[in-house]
Amino acid sequence: MSVALAGNAPATFEIKSAHLPLVALMLKSSNLDLLAQEFAQRFGDMPDFFDHDPVVIDLHPLNVAEAHALPDFGALQTLLRQHRLTPLAVRGGTIEQTALAVAAGLTPAPDATVQRAAPSAAPTETTSPEPVAAPQPMPMPGALVIDKPLRSGQQVYARGRDLVVMAMVNPGAEVIADGNIHVYAPLRGKAIAGARGYGEARIFALSMAPELISIAGIYRTSEVALPESVQGKTAQVRLVPGPDGDKLVIDAIGV
Image (cartoon, rainbow, N blue to C red; front, side, top):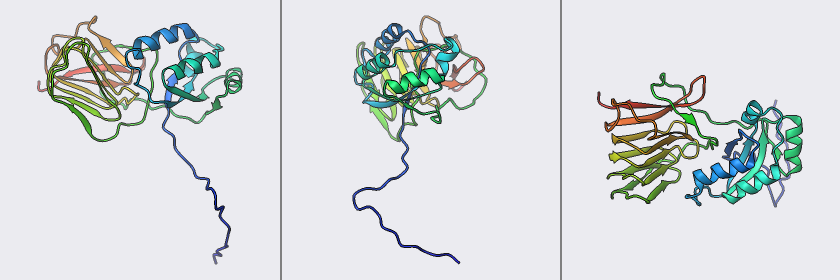
C-alpha cells in the first residue's frame, strides 16, 4: 500500500537537473603562444564566431602529446575569453593538472563527453586535423539561403543551422555553417561546415573546386589538389573516423 506524504516546497526557488551544451577545447599543446597564434589564424577574421560559449578544456590530447605537461590555466582562460569563449571546466587531466585548473577557478568535469563523428564508409581522401577542434551540439533546423554570388573578401556564417548558396562562391569568399553547406553553383572559395564540431555535417557543391574545405575542424586546402574524379565535378565532402583520427572523404555525386 502506497502512502502519499504532504511536503512544503520553497516559495523562492527550485533545484532541477540541467544540461548545458558545451564547446570542448581539445588541448594538444601547452605552448600558449602557439595556441594564441593558431586561434588568431583560425578565428581572427571572425571576431563574432563565438558568443561567450561555455567551454570544457579536455586535457586527454595534451597528455598523449606532452605527458604530464602543466599548462598555465590562468593565461589559457584569458586567451579563450579574448575570443568570446567562457571556460568553465576541465576534464582528462592528471591529479596535478586538475589541481592547478581548480586553483585557477575551473571545475572538474570527469563525466563530460565529447561528440565524435559517426561511423561511415572507408575514406578515399584524407587530411590533417587542425590544432584546435571545438565540438558542439547538433545544429538547429532551418537554413540560411543566399541568392547572390559571393565575391572575394565576403563571408557568410549560418550560426546554428545549414547554409544554402544559390550562386557562385568565388575565390577569396568564405561560407561557414554550424550544419551542412549546399552550394548550387561552383565552389571556388572556402567552405567550413560543422563549424562548432558537428561531425555529421557535409559540404555539397555542383562544381567542387574549393580553396579550403573543413568539417568539424578537419580541413584540406587547395595546396593538395583534388583528384580528377571530383575536381570541378558535382561532389560532397563528409567526415569519417579512422584509426589515425577523423578524415575527410570526397565523393563524386551522380556517377
